[in-house]
Image 1 (cartoon, rainbow, N blue to C red):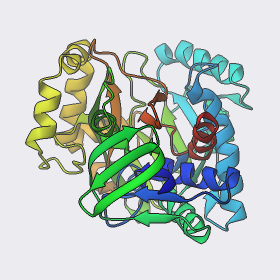
Image 2: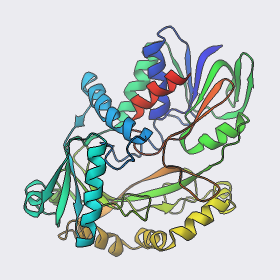
Image 3: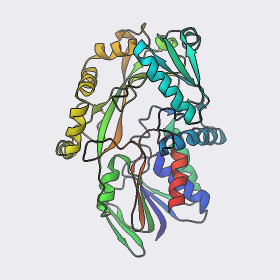
Image 4: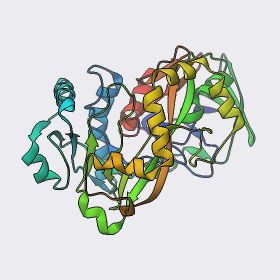
Length: 392
């Protein structure tokens, strides 16, 4: 009988395990992960950015968690000698019509208590010499890290404290009772006093297995990247973002210097035909049919038809992808880019077609289900872990 069982070995599940031991050092903790390793999906395919919280609605969980999380994540990496670089980023307006949007974003950042500043055209060039910008917001608190490395360190700390991580184990059934919960898997049955669902891309399904109806469904969106060839990395110093389109719920293509020195360009955002579909050819009929039968998806698709079509075109046309990147850095050419990695974002969508924008926690009888942990979940993971433990 375990005191706590966590389903999901991504960075959020591991952060919860870490937070449990910080608060209850003598607890017995089990983490169940269906893959052969931790951080196999969203965590391991993350862009590696430590977000500041500038984009998020003041007072929201996202805004609070991002600001606190950027500080605690940086401190954790320094404490455990993990690679981290608080390099800062610029959010750049390249057109006159974007200047009012940039100003609104600046005001939001100030409302979130961030130390940011506005840059004019000349000041933008001092920070990022190859950027085409009329103005920009400088965000010094943004940084880069390897979240896979962070997750592996969290797993190591959990095991050192007596926790167990059961890999290559798939949850098949969950039954809650007065004493806790029974979790049946393909590797045996586990009894626990309390269950925490941190299953990411499958969090809605795990909640359903436990008997809870959630008024949302996870819809997977794939983000596809290119990488700058090594000889062209000089074009990017740190992190370069566009002004987000207020009519579209994704940030748009940007340039990210990774912790290993590589530079990623992207991503676009397209529907994935599989919850863990990192390639265009990855299709799972169950996953796809669930999405296509969900009325919320069609309402979302009709609302963002123009933007969604443009994203799909960029997915199949490198030329169009590069044209988008050239709005930020005109010198980037098609030959400067090679195919990079892809990631899949677990986006919760309600039946009326609304994207669930904030963290969503559903409390069960003897369980807690993290049914939406969108970006900046990796940045905020240590704070999310503490907040979840406080709710138990």
